[in-house]
Length: 352
Ligand code: ATP
Ligand code: MG
Ligand code: MG
Image 1 (spheres, rainbow, N blue to C red):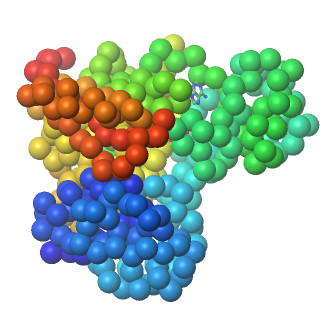
Image 2 (cartoon, rainbow, N blue to C red):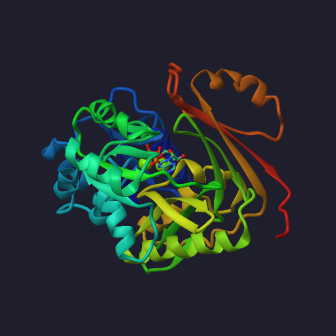
């Protein structure tokens, strides 16, 4: 069996490691933090920083392929690995996704719509951008944002200075607020041979910037489902991508716009564990190892709910439901806003 190296020690790495073990593979986790939920289910673990080139090289020599479970892996870390092992998905997909400005430019270049946006690195640029894009708008840091962190809504141009101050001078992007009817996402995959398969789009609900719930198929109209899947296929091919990707979209009266993509397995794809024969984690492992990928078919409708912070304390009640697919990540202390686990419930597959 293959030996798989995973950069990152969180719950996505943990679920990838479990999937790899099922296929007879050995997993080696590389993560700097002391407590890494992924390391608990992996055969090997290196605890070192992402700028430790020697540790990265030794890690890469010990495996057959390297992947990552979070998108803020420094580009330099991939360069340290590249001479020793293939990295999948490749550095280009990672780099584009790390910078919201590059990401939106790239999406537009390949013909995918985004909200109007502008680069902002000074108060003057922000005022200019607000004049063009209008309010309300959202100012986001170009890098390192997740779960809605590093974002400020600007309802009135008078709030511009405060918004800039809140981001502490980090390079930013101003985005128009999408007047969306709903949020959806597509979990797509592309194999080493170029085969593409997508899971059905899910309808997502966020609260305080954090994903609460994904329902599949939800209330997404058939035309929007098709359009979302086609956009994902286009992106996968344009990036010459290998592995699983998560693409987030907004459905508006004017059609779909792409919000962002994550070059990894995705929280909105956890439902696939219960509802598909080959789930997103199996799919990712297959793709990066050059195996044939699954077709993305699901046998049931599904609803996934995140257990955030103290919500995970309800696990006993959830476990008492004989049809609840419960997942706990072994993270220890429940801090507010922290994803501690999730639960998936299936329904009979509704015929479209
Ligand atoms: P993630 O945890 O998904 O990586 P993130 O911190 O990268 O999140 P976004 O996905 O860009 O941030 O934004 C979080 C949420 O905020 C979105 O799912 C959406 O609900 C809302 N949002 C972000 N950008 C816009 C926009 N331009 N118009 C309307 N709503 C938006
Ligand atoms: Mg994001
Ligand atoms: Mg997002």
